[in-house]
Length: 120
Image (cartoon, rainbow, N blue to C red; front, top):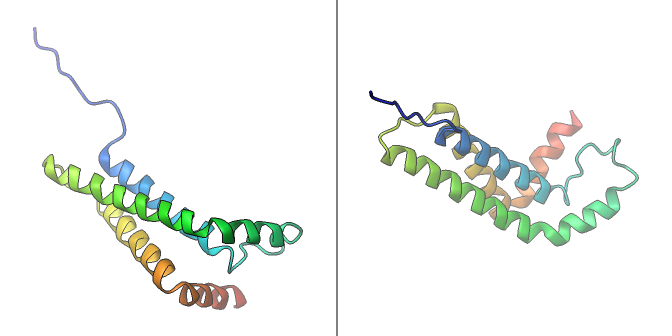
């Protein structure tokens, strides 16, 4: 008798998408020291959280870089195993890499763009 062994667990494409979303979330957390998210809801604790996030910004950006690097590693592993990467996962990975790059090298551009979107 033959028994088929199947892999029951998250696929690499799913892990790549989760890693991309985690990188984008850490970029948002890193940039929230300059641009408060939902200012009307968090008005009371905004100054305190802004000061804390300003102090944590280098660590959050480092975590973002690590998440994006891990996402690219997962994408490379899936190609190495002859698996076709999911288009949504690849797009999320490249968009998150772009946002991490912009937030590291051009943080004010990102803050101005977000402020213009909120002002509308």
